[in-house]
Amino acid sequence: MKDQNANTNKNIKFNPTNLNKQFEENKKNNNLNINNNKNDIDDEYNVNNNYYPHKQTIQQIIINIRDLFFIVLEMIIDKKNPLPFIFAFETRIFSLSIFLLLFGSLLLLLASLMKSPN
Image (cartoon, rainbow, N blue to C red):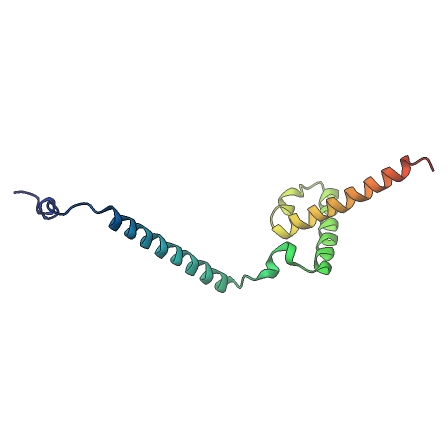
């Protein structure tokens, strides 16, 4: 017995333009599905622009820096590793980076004042 599926497509010629159209349609459908899924996830978890650390207000950033500083200081006094705590959330990483920038700038300013001949 011969395979009938092989015989049914025997006289059909290959059409590359049709293949490209099908590929582009599938790609568009996949992109639409991805965007719909992303919107559903955003709606489900109430994701908004306040989640991003750089979109916070100055007051929130200062409070986060202060809280992070004191919590890390307590962890160091208790001889615990603060790195897992810091790198757990993006807001903590952002707060640490702002703190290090401010602290480094302050040290640079003080060092340049101490070196001045006046």
